Image (tube, rainbow, N blue to C red):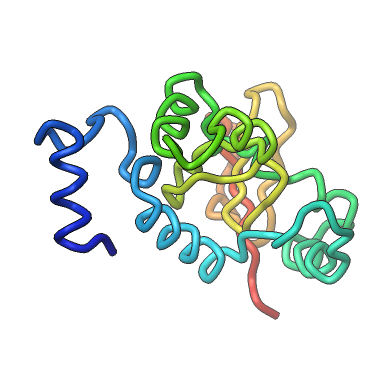
Length: 171
């Protein structure tokens, strides 16, 4: 959490306007970002910690929770999650927030950063979490699973869902 002194310094730096109103606070304040990322780690198993490693145990657990193969689980990444925002305006916000901490464009590119709209933090495309969401085309075949909110409902006279959310469960 930002101290009063840090908040006042930020206000003074921004001319008293409190920063860029169009940017999510987590893109501009590292403390907010880290708090929100910690929540994603704790509540939704955001990871793996280092996506460049095999992370066999991590992916085996995800596959079990999602009831898919390990290879299938590895395809559900933040980079193809419907809640992952890499719009130009969002990347500009992330770049502004990194500011003078180094080469912001290089950080964004190397980490393939975007913004998680579910947990409100700067997110790496190569990771995943239990709240991974996919957009569904209306032409896709959709089958309601046994834990689906649509279980038992007649799908013939309902429109297709536009989002499918994979949320793991503990065994």
